[in-house]
Image (cartoon, rainbow, N blue to C red; front, side, top):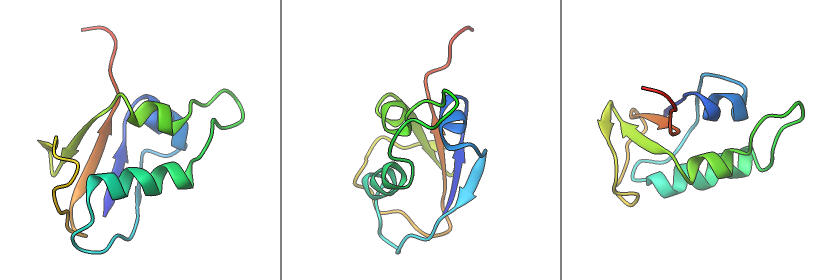
Length: 88
């Protein structure tokens, strides 16, 4: 599954995107839990904590808003993590 990070999420992880393996039928909750395990705390150098960021983020699945955290996902899906943006 391709995970794309934007703004503060990218800053927390240190990359713009990465591919992670998830079984078919995994949920957004599973993805978030895995990501917070991989990136458990604020990084050195002032990077924010990913757990704090995803708690306030919106998510897209294949460029469509994903609000159901229990909807089954597929290994070919693209998940975007969109933290709140400032400005307009």
